[in-house]
Image (cartoon, rainbow over all chains, first blue to last red; front, side, top):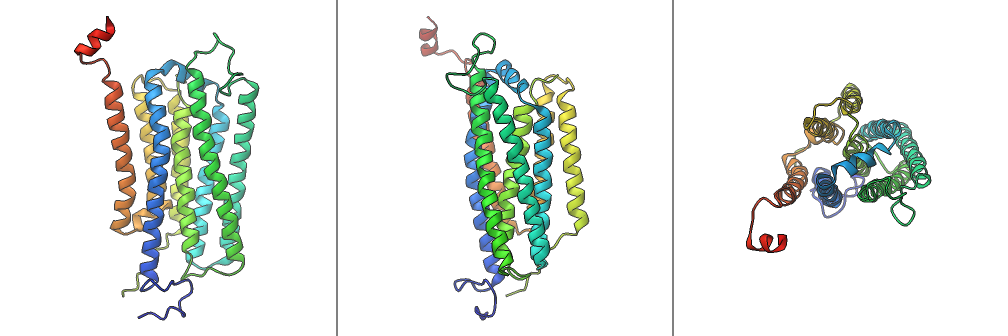
Length: 216
Length: 107
């Protein structure tokens, strides 16, 4: 029977760290499944209305800036790399590297959200925010308002998830600075990493589906 | 209880996957401007799925995780296919079959 006091981070209801690690991992994946359910619903709405209104979808997509979207995709993939390297540093117990990589991830996430804000501001000025100011009528197909409703809902939800991720990063930095992690115990870093990679995956689908339509 | 050593991937593996993801991003932007008709969607989604697989298997370390973890991860995406598949099979088949109701509604 493992001496629970001797093993840092081992909770009393687990036999050993390996069992705790596996349970933590499965629990995190179960949560990510619920996230798939959540975003899956939004993607389904997108699918149904896109098959109904392909021209309006292509027209809407044309108003999105491919350059900014592509830069954001690159930024997020870079942040996934830095996060994966933070997890790796965690497994090796390298405190300095953990902090460096998480800070980098945080900065890249901030860049993404900054670019997103610029895009949202553009949409506001171009009268592409659904509501009374959407228009002008006659120039845009009426279903384009649906497209932009989905654009804001999906990218907005995604951005909200990134904000939560940023909060988790800060929490991790504080814990790391206080020396709570070691080569034997770095599960929280790994779990936050899984969350961050999931948010990246959602964007990997959002980018082509929103930005790259009707460009031929 | 067996001591399962934590698998740590070499830095080169992460960098290789990163470069592949960058390449696929460039490819998907380029492919968006090529006209292959109905296949544009298939190409875009195939590239996206490939990128997701790379992130899930290597960045999320699924390749080195237990089979039970694979089942959890697979379950989520399997559910997604059911959601998309059944929903689309409904919407895409609207109007295929005539019925008393549809004839009544059409006038």
